[in-house]
Amino acid sequence: MDLPTATKADVSLRVPADSAYVSVLRTMTAGLAARLDFTVDDIEDLRIAVGEACALVLPEAVPGGDLEADFRLAPGTLTVSVSVPTNGSRAADQNSFAWQVLSTLTGTASSSGEGSRFEVTFTTESSIPVPGTPPGAGR
Image (cartoon, rainbow, N blue to C red):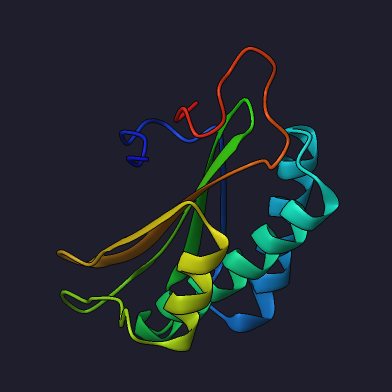
């Protein structure tokens, strides 16, 4: 499944780039996934995925920067992007534990570190099929 093209986020959240605020993103993710009728297990996987995505980007943030999260919602699908300002290009360590957990728990995961922002994006689908849509159809 390809990542959806970049579109305006349905929901955006900006918090200080500090690990103390990751719980806010995790809670918001759970609430949005519940609105999409994700199962309890799917929601917990999403909460963990958000934590791992933040673990990848936060060490690269410039001091005093903000952690930005964008959520794109579609029936049975949630795409999350977390990003921080950086001092130059960055790349996700795809051999790291955080990346391995993220890519295991989500349908797709990618990172972008060009310029002055470092972003990790992932998409996941509910384990409950949306009526009239074949599973994995890229909703």
